[in-house]
Amino acid sequence: MDRLGDGLLLGVLDATPACVGILDPELRYLYVNPALARLSGKPADEHLGRAVEEVLPFTGRGKGVLREVLADGRSREGINDGVTLSGAGLEHHSWRGAYHRLEADGDVVGVAVVIMVINGVRHQHRELERVRKRLALLDRAATRIGTTLRVDDTCAELADFLSSELTDMAAVMRYPAPHGSEHLPEHRPPPAHRPPPERHGPVRLRMAGVAAVPHLQDYLVEISATVGEQLHYRHGSSVQRCLDSGRPVVENQLSAEELSRSIPDMEHFPAHRAVGVHSDLVVPLTARGNLMGVVVLVRVGDSPPFEHQDVVMAQDLVGRAAIGLDNAQRYAHEHGIAVELQRALLAEGPCPHPGIEVATRYLPAGDSALVGGDWYDVIPVSRRRTLLAMGDVMGHGVEAAVAMSHYRAMLRVVAADDLPPHAVLERLDELITRSGTDRPATCLLVLADPENGECLYTSAGHLPPAILDADGRVGLFPVPVGPPLGTGFGGYEVVTGCCAPDRTLLLYTDGLVERREQDVDEWLGRLTRQRLPSDGSLEDQLAVLLAGLVPGGTAEDDVAVMAARLRPWSPTSGWPLGLGAGAFGLGARAGG
Image (cartoon, rainbow, N blue to C red; front, side, top):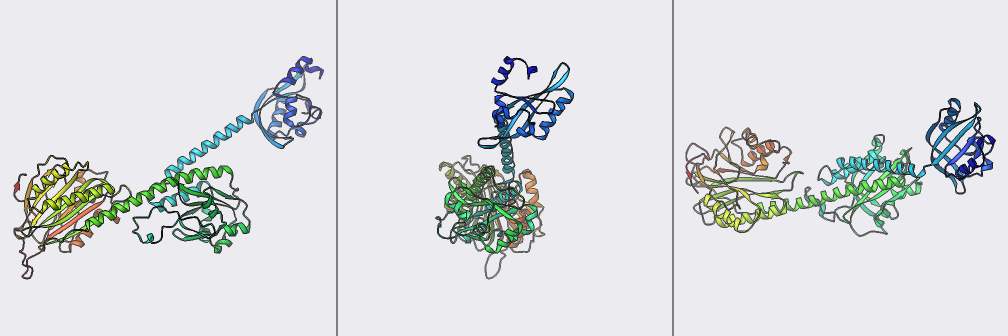
């Protein structure tokens, strides 16, 4: 030790907070300062003469660095991990070390080791890495969960994502609908419902989505219920405890008894044991204070048990997905109300004049928008004439459907005065403007007069009517377009056309032809390229038209369409055959 210097140098080394040790060429301790002794958990004198691995278990790489420094004399630095024994037992540490070869009179006498413990820094780095991974996972989830506004699709996407990123199998289970609502139309799921907790009886849930890693796919039917199946979880199960507490429940290293208590159907128990189910995590599915069900994550085989970080991540993912699920339920509920309201309103109204045959269809929008204010009406007026109307109120949802009802009621009142159709639009525009509404509307009116064999057309910003001729071709009928209703501008024109029983008049809203990626000429071109059965019933003609323009029955916007045709004269009906060679053809024009 005399080569190390005088007492002043030793005093500095003893006082420094850095861990300092001097090793001989055989890597046995010659000197240990108090800081290094505290790190190792052994008194300084117990280090002297002992090898490094006997006192401070560096990793193999750390010991290799010391030999390299002794061999070539080049100082080195590095970060290392190790285990020390303290009064509290084994402790894991991270440190940054600097290693220097010591020489005296040209001889290698040892190596100096200077260590700074960096547990806090390493911990921060690990935490930052966990946060980075967590944010990356949430970012991926945002693009894969909630891509539609369909409730069951969102549940399936959540199960798929969890099984691919966090667990071996995931199941999303929701409270079933209130009694009786299972008979509601498919497009109108009931709002989320949470029955009172059944602490002493089974909990009833509906499987809404389930997915598993590839090697479990063949066993999925054996270990899980299918989507739509009703499940009953007994009292004391992890699912029941999660629902009662509203907090996640973790069960690691499940015993046979615990596993049998947690699964809803004992028929699946052998399959669970066969695939090696050992841990489950149940997370409440909650959004805006509304408990909708649970999400169950399962790990099998060699997968590790669930840790705290898994619980945190699962809560984040399920919480975000629950907001999307709640939005989908709210959308479905409002969409259903609007559809039912609109269909109920459109179903009202008297029959047309006996000299005219009419068929109508209404299709609600798909996922891209709520239903809107599309409407139609058939209003018999005096002198054996019938007013056909097709309109579209701006906007979507329940408010648009209610506005549609108001406008339709106004139209009936005005039409009762038996005015020319352009005068009807003038009066209707004035009434809507005076009502203070902020929802303009388009409207096309056709006054059909079978007795005289003519039709009068007028338009308030609406698409032109179409005519199906005797050979099945569809052509557009040009009608001067005035401003939409509710603008207060007025100024509508009327044109006259002849009618014939072998022609069909088609009135429609823009949802029938509109596509976002096309302009209006391309929209209408799609309509005129249709070939329809000219001698078929009006219902058949509408069916073929919708099949050609709205495949699958789902459009980007809601669709209303009407087909009208004069009835041919017969001795029993007394209605005359339409005059002239043109069918609903262009005739004289009158100003508004």
